[in-house]
Length: 466
Image 1 (tube, rainbow, N blue to C red):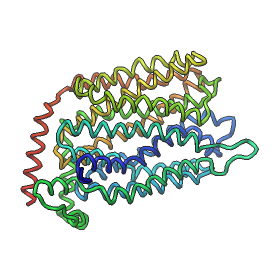
Image 2: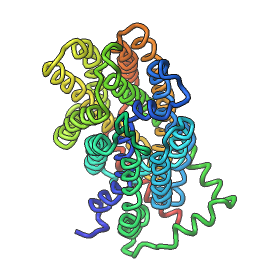
Image 3: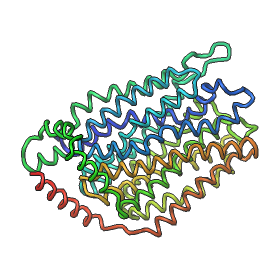
Image 4: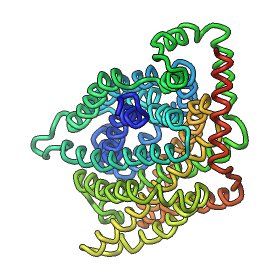
């Protein structure tokens, strides 16, 4: 099989995304512990009360610049190509992760690092557009996006496990000067390692498609000409046209569904480490950093197993909209079962907790696969970068709001009311709203019809370019 085949190009593309995915899944469970390390400006007797709000701010800071940058990078990738944007993202992911690792006592510096990481953190957005461009048929997209989800599920296993092993706060007598350096250095190293490998073997999907249609070798100069002409009048007009393409009702419907699952995901992943790390007298589980990372790893194993076995079959069986509603519906009782988990002790509580959270992560995999396919099916290949950029921009808004919101809710219900499990009501309300909106706006088109329409549009655009 040629390295330029759709299958190999999918693998090389995901190699671009893997370092960012592993790094983010490694950092997320450690945020409450980082807050306790960096918050030297907070009095010790007030630290626990401040952890929830600061953890929310740090979790949301990564997504704040993505409100603008996702659609910008996604649209630019439609014009100048996917590879240049992916390379920029990898470079700055390595830099900002390394800087976070050498931080020892500044909460403000940690926020700056996460903000800069977000400015250049759109590789997942660009990759989703590229996958839709590589695979034009529904079967191919279903496989590619399932593999994309499996990568994030695998990262959810490897990242927290690596973070838990490498991170140590030392002892009271001999604290480590850089407790998070080894974990962050590994994340930065993965980014550096991925750069040369994927730069050599990954090719622009548009160039490969044209080469196949014309039986000609791909042109290595077309990309540089687009970069050179980007700031010309013609280039700016093309940029504006690409930005406007996804702004239709047909595209905005699945984008709003994506926003709702993104909100639930960020709320869930912010609350879980808070619940794990909180002391027993606050209603938490008093896990160590390693225990928290290990718990997240075990639950991610469930997601990876089902992502690679049944998610694609479920979406095929129930359709994209039906699968979305099914996945969101399971989240509601799972949150309610948290009451039992907090009250149970010993192995019964551990097994129930893993079952509850494992089911949520499995449902998230189904929901993400269905909604990403909805977005890709609603736009032509030439606008996939802009469409996924717009969806990621809108999702970034919910990911900015969710961590501080649930963080401050946590402060009230855990520190004051001693009922931490009630913070998950926020997730339940969002899940109910998502189901109602999905059923109200169920206007899917037949998959083959959409594929044929996109192929015709792509051929017409290619003819115009020639």
